[in-house]
Image (cartoon, rainbow, N blue to C red):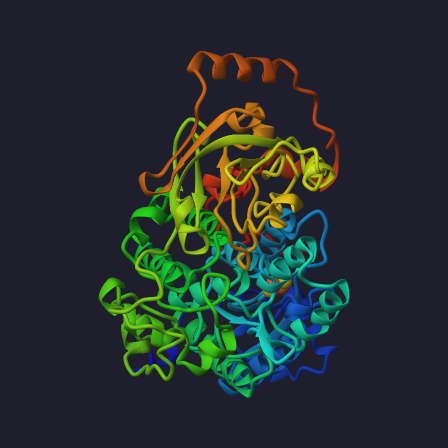
Length: 579
Ligand code: FES
């Protein structure tokens, strides 16, 4: 039964729009300049629509249209929709890496929500860092929140076959370097790969985060998979607009949805879909905002035994459009039902289990049954050992089984510039058993922890037919990428982690099944090298602005690379008026 009017909670917007005095005049009058009628301020819920649309973020290009459909739903349900922009982070455009600015977006979103007279918020994001940045900011305010994602692009097409965002870029560029693809063909593939607005249509970081948002109950069913240009994307937006008004009235806050149980579901779904390692950082940072007890090691034990059910690139063959037509994430979650916390609440008022109970699978090649998965083990391996005291991660579903256990000599690159300068040098001392090690690509070192961990293989080995090698770094890897790649080594080299003192020729042991990553040198030698490294440290070159803030306050990978002073929440209350 809906509450009687006298029982309705007082909305926070009432403090701004409900007064009869000077302050109420100021808040309302300027808003009326946009053509809003007096009864727009009659105590109805005010819904902020936080939009990361930008022409510099083509993955989010459809969000202007999506916002209009959210507004229709809000008006229809008796709310007042007010759209506001937030910094957009175009993964393919920003330098040195969009991840450097995720926390800046999170700060902007947090303060925009808190500082404005809104009762609930719809987050419109999509491209990799926009979704987590918005979520982190919203979590620290804790209003009712819904996510509507951009949606994936339609499948890429090239020479009669489907090609996937990112994944085929890595394949094609290695083929060009190996001499098996011409530069003209490479250039032709460029136009066929990205042919509609929307996010990468592989199971990259954007699709992963959209999927996890849906799995955590913070978005409507099919939010992750409905293509950006599909009418159903608009329907999701419209329905989300209606729903957020109800959530505002019921005060159904984000913290009531994003519980520890919801995070556990996210990790299991991450494994089943073969999702991006970037989700590790984003979920850790998000949990830190909410005060949910959740650690790096949780990724390993919660995903252990979860099979890969979705046959999507980069771990498999198909693309997001195929996943949508096959039944979308609801069909995947129904398959996983016995392994999920099905009783958790979602934004609709249904439990998660109820939200996928009627789901059907229409293509068993794309979504496999639990009894016949694509791969029996998926998820994230969290490594430990003397080379990564704070941990490191590896995605076994995207790696070569024969390299899961490997011992080889390090070939060290001190920086990304060093890698580019020498990787194709015919004189480079390297063979297929070598372990490629890259330093200086962590959060502080680059700065921003770029997606360069899947470093290219040496040309001379590609020409010999080598397809994969063990690669280790403090960098991240694109969710669209693949290979036997150890990422997020912590502490990073720029923070004086053992990675900083690895030398070419050192032996390294990777034992994935036993979660070990060891630098096989004497403990005294390691200590001496680290002491020498400390003595040779130079002052930071980042002496001003955001780069200084970032390098002074960013945490290491096992804490999600959030700023140390942003952990936790400050709520939505602002005591003082502006005039
Ligand atoms: Fe934007 Fe992949 S580059 S989603």
